[in-house]
Image (cartoon, rainbow, N blue to C red):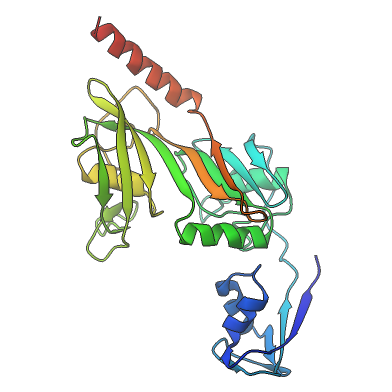
Length: 308
């Protein structure tokens, strides 16, 4: 892809430059437009302009979109199950133990490296280290993730997330029997001031809401459906811990040991969203991976033996 320049003649009443360009370039996010303007890529009547500068009818506006920066990431042959794909996006089933994108101290062997081996051209909105990544899952959480293949799709999916139009359903195994069996957990989440690795419910955190419902009860644990309304880091793990029912296998938020699983029992099972190009509603489901299914089978067998 090469550098692109878009030119417009304003025909609207006075409006901020960034808002005007947003109306002309729906495939670009407001944050990316603002960054382009701040970098001198947006001009008003041939002169560099600020995002807040007023555009008047008859003004000549130009926006230069640089060619994508080559990714300094190596494609890696890591098996990834693609459950849905079209020209705009993929829905992938991320295995547990796989970090989503490179970060300091973890430069490779991530979902992004795997995706680049499958599809070299992905949306660039997430930046050079996060191509195509619309949202994330924790390293040891398995399940469904949306991956954008172009910027317009990325913008559409990000907007759906922001407006809470994407619905997610998780399956979690928690310690104890939740009372009541279903409910709503609300608690503002931010970084735990006592531990940088953990998140916590704190007064100045970001508002967070999770709906939960108990699906099956066992001797010491319960299978729970969690439907997060917001998408904060570690949200389900923090919220279930806050009501006294941390996730089985979650060493970060619970000291209880288990031989059932090697990691937290949390799986992103279902995603509901609208296709960017058509608006058609889409639902994708990923079954429990073998390790979690085996743990559940063991519990159900023990439950059956107990009730004989």
